[in-house]
Length: 430
Length: 128
Ligand SMILES: Cc1ncc(COP(=O)(O)O)c(C=O)c1O
Image 1 (tube, protein in one colour):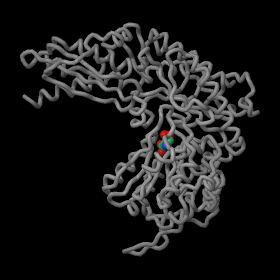
Image 2 (image 1 turned 90 degrees about the vertical axis):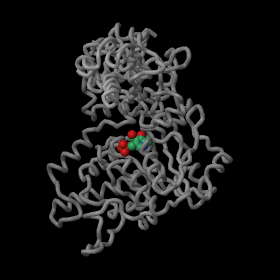
Image 3 (image 1 turned 120 degrees about the vertical axis):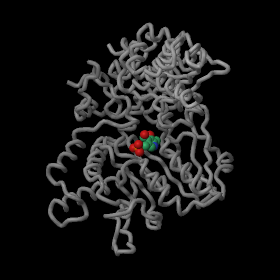
Image 4 (image 1 turned 45 degrees about the vertical axis):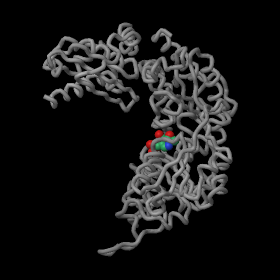
């Protein structure tokens, strides 16, 4: 029996009970209590459909891809390439040759920094980031600018965690030296949904030559994303946050860019012709997929996309919005609790960071202590700096607790979370 | 129950009213370490008596209840001990002192202060 009862029917008409039954892990007990998994921004759980697709590959058509003419290899290659098409359609990317499989979002960004950045960024050039980036969209750029003598600039955020992007503010930041602007679609700490389409067009108005990279790690799993409408140069995301397995991520890049870019890793698979002294590169996207790829992972990601498409991304977003509104209301009722990020659920994804503070507004229960106590009630949450230490500095907090939702979460789970928070306050005599 | 083990009354009492929190002006030994998992920071300062015995030990920093209480208890515990005895301290001694059995993820928090202490007395070894 799935432990959490679903009392209310959600507005989306989604059958959450049925969805929950697809996720075997939701039957787990943690310290004797039903698991309440609220750490989806770190990684999502996996439905049977995804798990089974991976097992099916290994049991029935395991073979290397693009190499053999035997039946198994053909089947594996077909499934691998079918996933590429699924990804391209899912994010409305157009030509699926613009979809490169990598191991995660981090690798996708490193690929761009290495293959595009090293040839296109020169001494004195500028890369513009924001104050809300995950370390994976910060550290690769730090290394690049340090190596090349270029410079990083940052778009600041306001006190509710929204980018300060008025036309004149942006005008000061985007200059003729700006070669790249890289920013997140949805913040993994604040939940802020950045108006990416508007940002892209504002940047292009100021500097049509600046390239734009968007980190979609927290967006693609939770809402409809159309690459052709947003029109970035690069867009990255990671499979394990969207019901897929770990070890597979996606780099979308415009065809013209991929064609000009140098390979990232080199070896087998990425070559066309190899002589003793030199080689020529394979066509895109395979030029960027050196060595045997994560075939099972890519197939699993395809199954995850099928699953999400079956539910409908509009419904996913609606369900999470409903949970977020409810959570914000309930958390607001808890004394001494402050939340971060936009107040308006329209402008935020299903991520809520918060802290328990004292009268002076200082953190009264360290998020780590809070997470341990919540865990003892079966509630899995994240605590810490969320791989965004510069953002923690901007917010002037050492760390934060974070809850994040997905399609299988319910309002009843939020009620249990609130009770567990009250319990933590009692233990800490607050 | 887990939280009863982790958050004993006595431990929270130490966390909320730590005895050896503070700074001293000219410490003989000092070290600072960060736990990258949660950003906890513990600084330990030691004043020696005759170059061998801990006369005063204080900690400062911020972080979770476990790391901060453990630092306070450890600082208190080493006062009056000589460096030879202190060098022999092991993880289990700290856990006994703190009186909890943390989950693997929280072990670092409990043992951060021991790492800082070892770092601090290492300096002494290199000086002499
Ligand atoms: C906004 C954002 N970007 C990038 C990443 C990195 O994803 P991965 O660790 O799969 O590369 C994460 C996940 O932690 C994230 O939340």
